[in-house]
Length: 424
Image (tube, rainbow, N blue to C red; front, side):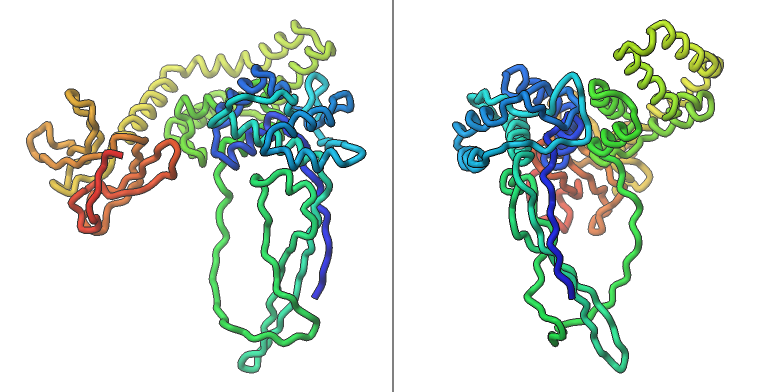
């Protein structure tokens, strides 16, 4: 059995990428949503310039004065007063610096009536700023080895627990940080403990998680792709053009087709090294180390032959991309096989008179099947490729703003339903 105390240092103040990732993690806000909100707060003079890669606040910024101003807001009064008791206030300095702009921080100007996204982003920035001024959190990690004798055999189990001893910066960053782990009951060396139950579990390794908008931004930063000013637009474009979809950034048929054609006819365009080199050249121009003319010449040489090969096959490439777009469009309206006739497919149809959507069989227009079902009138409907075990109708997923996605059988007469409405 062993006990060890560990200090957890406070986090640095936000740069733009950190803010976007944290906002996605806490609120599921897309990077564009977070950036737009931060820019509104900046234009309102409530926060510093948001398009920064810095995790540092220079000593020229009046940290104590900002806290004095934040103390006027009732939700920060106690926290700001606690920090102001310290004789020295030094925010944690992160590894990343930006000579043009400091880390994102509140200016001290007090907003009037913020609501929704802006209120949450402002609160996140203020609490992160105060957390960066706090002391380290201290945790006590306990590990114990338990030996079980059963049927003449010895089995060894390991217990691990953690306990928060000193909150430090954590108290300033709540509710955006949660205590991890669980506390073990008080144990002593050689103690005998009762065994309530033994279970044998078989588990398998899981594949890596898909990217989400936040982790895509981090990867781009790590790989040197894009800049603080362009990364949000790049990720935004991937979703707007339909190359990827969903919070889990699932690549679409169109996205696969684009990549496959680039690999076949213009592989250099997919090169991380080439993109990184061009981004670095932009930085050299900004610093006066490289001329604009030399950069253009280098870029033309790099891309000239690649784009020529792409141009030579544009007819075939266009045909494949067009086919992928058609397949995506068909997939977006088809929900599954029709349980009425068995060979038709249910698809989303919009009534031209009422504007309401419903599910109808593809054989309806041939006069072969009249099967139809009402659909929810709000939210995005997605087919999940599964049929109801009770009635055979397709199960759909509905995603609406402000609530968690839910799944339902589209057959309102299904035995599994106890009644309800689809007009949500």
